[in-house]
Amino acid sequence: MTTLPTVYVKPGEADRLVAGHPWLYENAVLRVTTEVPDGALVQVKDHRRRFLGVGFYHSRSKIRVRLLSHERVTVDTAFFEERIRAALEVRRRHMPEASSFRIVHAEADFLSGLIVDKYEDVLVLQISALGMEQRKGQIVEALQRVLAPQAILERSDAAARKFEGLPVVESVLAGSWPAPRERTAAARAEADPAKDQPDRSALLRVQISGLTFEVDLWTGHKTGLYLDQQRNYLQVAQWARGARVLDAFCFLGGFGLHAARAGAVQVHLLDQSQEAVQAALRNAALNGLADRCTGEAVNVFDWLKARTQAPPHERPVPQFDLIVLDPPSFTRTRASVPDALRGYKEIHVRALKLLRPGGVLATFCCSHHVDGRTFLDVILAAAYDTRKILRRIATFTQGPDHPVIPMIPETEYLKGYALELVR
Image 1: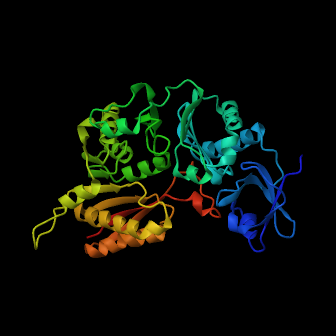
Image 2 (image 1 turned 135 degrees about the vertical axis):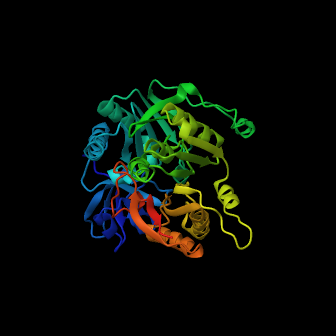
Image 3 (image 1 turned 90 degrees about the horizontal axis):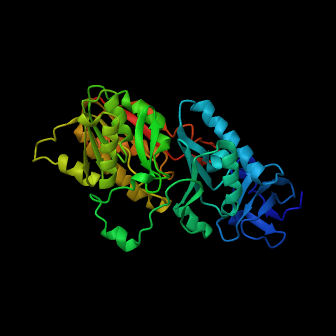
């Protein structure tokens, strides 16, 4: 093996790497032995010259090195194939029934900066690191060897790419699939969501726990669908029989449709996106659940506020037996956490006023910067303000296809609770 350039780590900074975290930050670098091209493979050693691992180097990123292995390895197509096969085995072991799931969860599968999602026979790739970007061809070849998919798409549109100096990329990397529609910013601004129908040729029917969802892999949230909630859809649905259900921030109707199938008498779907609500209602019809599902394209905060206002000395009339709150992340930086917590408290205050005694609130937070204890404290503060007593009956996390490595806190982001309204 060719001798790699060496990055030396400052005293006291190696422990985190030895324990398993793959990121070496710029302020932890002692020195680099030679000039290194960005994206190149380097070896990392502590200040006493003890070998720590190999990874991708980037001189202009706050993450100076992304470790890939604590062993000396050759990073080629065979390397990616081995890592992808190992990740796939984890999913097959823990989710043998699933046909759509995340195959590679970046750092949690020891492939920092790479996400691969499987939607039936189509793969969607997302890259957020320069080293991975430069080896995209090897990654695609490895995926073809392991899974022989119908197509491999790239949706590298995550904000993290700008920190690596990478542009947004949406393209078909392999196989047969309609290319993303080219639309200018002006065209997007003038589009009427009520009339702007999705490109039907780009829709894929995906099976989630026995329900069928039509997914637009070019415009859907994340890489198309919230694959991380699959197990939670089923768990929440157990409280839906005979219930009136509110699915707030519904997107394609994952929680609402599972609740309807489980025996809910009525499910109301809310999302600010007209296109998302229309898609959720189409999915309801596709699964024979349209008679129990209604939907509105609204600002969810405004909708909740309007239905919890009451004259002086009166209280809003509770309307729902099961309320699901699954909003997008309210914060992507630590600096905005206080504002996010105020937003979370607001929707919980409103939701609790609409929940019938004995009903269940299933609520989720997908921000890495808000930990589970802090999120629960916000819910309890909302309960205090509304003079409600809650009983915790379940705790949620992301599915096993989005594995969590405790030493890498960045791998854990989704948390949630089911709380029964005692009074």
